[in-house]
Length: 365
Ligand code: NAP
Image (cartoon, rainbow, N blue to C red; front, side, top):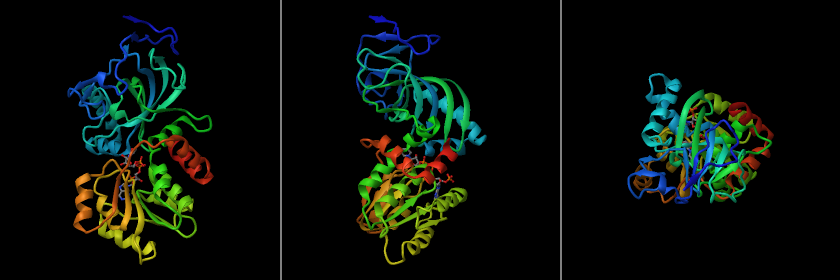
């Protein structure tokens, strides 16, 4: 049994067929292979947006915010650099039904307008016509893209004409009134980072952020600054000199070290003096977009300190065996992209710092 919805935002869009079948809130009904997988680890999902299960929402997609590690990998793998990214994205979606980079395993998130809500997908505070950003990874979101119309390398964003399906379990956020859409979506992409700093860092701590000049790095630095107080220290490591310079001008760090975080010895030798020379950090956050920074993070952390790997480029064996190999009893955290209230937390953090906000607006707006 199926019927067409009556409340579509854009009357020119062909409405999907609304199915009575509920589907699974976790989205397993869309998994094509392998059998019994959840959509995120699945090899391939069904991205047919002409049919909508009762627990699903349909979104007209305007912008994809590709995960930084994924964007960089596609850029480096293409002879055309950033211009080759659209081709890689279209190939991934054609093969997998979702933007799930087969090399990095990561996705990103999207900005779009809700165009249909399944019969059992209501009650989530959103209506047809609302603009939303997804807070669940593109690596699990069924996505169909007709055309890519713009590429913005700085923010790893692509403007597209496409459609996506949101499962009932997938978090999303309505766009705030006081941020440009592109900026909000850029912040939501890394909204899981700052709340974790707030949980793990306390007054007086010494904190290091690897990749501190990038998007998530800036948020971690800002959150760390307000947590450690005057008695603590915040040191950032950044190898992209323009970003390092912008971070210095922001004045949130006790030191911004220009170093390559994939070189643990050079990073240690540059960072320990900046921490005061006599102690390692209480907490290190890895926010780089390249593989190979695990050992720098571990070397810089004191015994029983905390290493938080937000970077999608992190390797579990490199981190676990690396810590063991140098006798470091540190708590290793995997960066969960979701934390309760993370979107509001991140927007409030940026609202609280006009200088940070100006930098983020200029870079990602
Ligand atoms: P970003 O804005 O590209 O920031 C990364 C920064 O690290 C850039 O400034 C980059 O410089 C710098 N960097 C690269 N290589 C370095 C090196 N060897 N030494 C020191 N700095 C280096 O990326 P982002 O959006 O903040 O994302 C950061 C990481 O978080 C990525 O790995 C991304 O995949 C991951 N992520 C995780 C989640 C999660 O849920 N855990 C969610 C979103 C993103 P360049 O300009 O030279 O690249």
